[in-house]
Image (cartoon, rainbow, N blue to C red; front, side):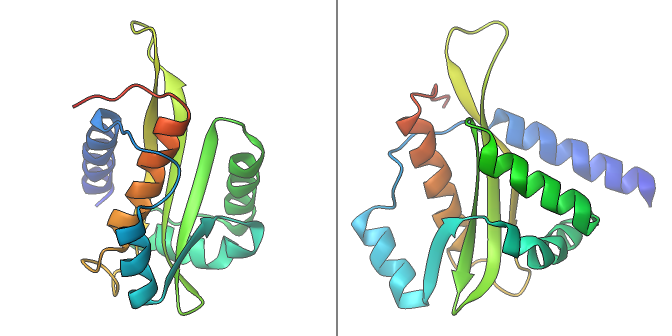
Length: 149
């Protein structure tokens, strides 16, 4: 079981490490309209999200202690090159994306790294992940991050 978790972890890490993004800090008007229809709100993660983010992380296969989750959220709030957003549907957090702007040793420009991306298992395939990734892409463009295709 532990070996499968490790394989899943490294597979996801390789996939996410290969992802970099573009865009402009906000959802497009079409995406905003679609989100409004679905009752979605996207906002930055905050300390009060600890308990629901713990549940989402467990769904992803990474149980986490409340104190560690709180520390991580605080770091993302305080660190200038880190961001974490949540998606709320009718007042309930149903997804999260956490990203960092970082540099490659061998490249002159920074890029966006997706550290965590999760949508509640009951809400998947409904556009929530797409909305969260749009926020991440927009943030990358705002920060002048490199776009890899």
